[in-house]
Length: 328
Image (cartoon, rainbow, N blue to C red; front, side, top):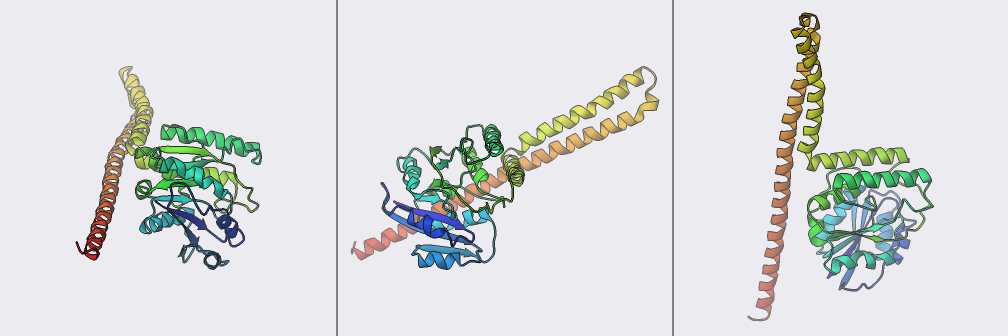
């Protein structure tokens, strides 16, 4: 079984050696361990530093494309390199390498498709009380929208089986953490969280400037992903709300009309009809969005099937080559 540890990096020359030195040389149930550094347009020579430290693979973006793109590049490259398990960790040395064994154990044991390191941020006294509160609220909101409890949905320390990685498609540009977990939930993957402790990171996050920005961007990502998978559910609710508001002025006009004073309140009828028309348009948009979401799922399944066929062909060709070498 081949494990590839991918490390998305942006200007991590000062810390990448710490990350690499903490990665274990051997792990139970793993035959080969390879390290992949994804340099997301660093300007401090991170890629050269990583190569000098002896990493197995380096992929470099010519310019900074963001954490989500670096993560997606890592998954794609690791799959091409034949990874059976992919571990994602950060280049800032936040996640201790000795937890990789705990992270991959549920996958090697066949219990899980995706495993996430639970930092328990709502209990970490290094975080301010406002940050702990926001983590607690975020966990409840994301769990409600996902339909299950996700203890630390924004943790970047996670492991994927080959099949789970192959079925993960990142489309948002901000961060992969919430989107990939929501995808895993909606695809029926088995997800486990394992408790971990984290190292203190001195430098500020490069993903967001402050906590309000992080909350806003995470909320937008969550809504986008939820809308991607449940567009009809969202827009039917919005359509119903608009229709409920629109029917009130129509009823008001009808009541006044029956009482003989409707001619002076035509604006109520116009407003009500306009809102009902908008409600109908929103409902149609929901139906079209649901159809597009269904087509997207079919396209993803088609791409996954194509990948399966390609790997089967490669296996058959390799087996035939071995048979020829053996003179069979």
